[in-house]
Image 1 (cartoon, one colour):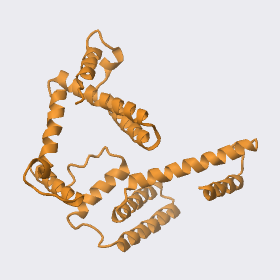
Image 2: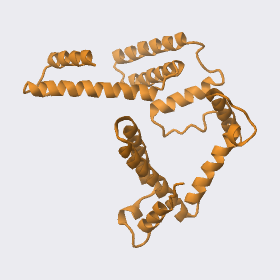
Image 3: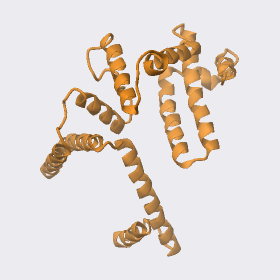
Image 4: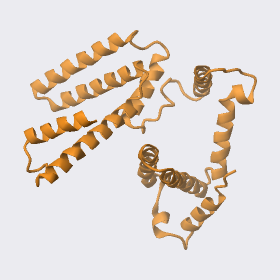
Amino acid sequence: MADVTPLAEIMVKLLAEDGCPWDREQTLSTLRKYVIEEASEVVDAIENGTPEDHCDELGDLLLQIVFQAALREKEGKFTMQDVVSAICDKMVRRHPHVFGDATAETSEEVLTNWEAIKLEENRKKANSLLSDVTRALPALMYAQKISKKAAKVGFDWPNIAGSLDKMQEELDEIREAVESGSIAQAQEELGDMLFATVNLARKLDTDAEMALRGTCSKFRARFQYVEKELKAQGKAPQTASLQEMDALWERAKSLA
């Protein structure tokens, strides 16, 4: 089994009085962005990297966990061992079909049990179904999670048609806001449109975050093709016309 003790010991040395000045200046607040960055780089390594890249990025993410635990230990709040013990207890508690007497033959049954256990845990410490959904998630993921929670208690369109109608309604409202010249109103309506789109993704049993990432990857590949072809012509996007770039874009689409 893996042992994180060597990494924890390195972190203690870095945070010591004679340790690293940069590390000693960090706080939980300053480390927030690095957690997000490292998690994103893990995802990128899964999608585009090698197993070696993935291993390296997982190490960087683990460092952030050890770093935060070390800061909390200095405050006397908890230790890295407390982190490990807490997640171990949670995993055992939420897998009664493995560690207890419950049964679950399918993934759907496992998820049903998991949600029921989470609901009971949250009932003891909160009064909202949405309380356990962190607001720091990427917006698309956050939207899908809270809409899924609400849908579980019946707050949802009965079918896909309702979601499609809602998207059209929000699109009409964006158009009205743009035509009125109200940027603030357009921004609000755009948010409503995005939320409606996420709801449709959920209805289609599709992950909105991954769907958008897929489109971003497709856009990136096609735009880079446009850049490459323009460069071969001795041009750059800044000096090419929209018509020229659009023609190359359509060619890139046909090659996909």
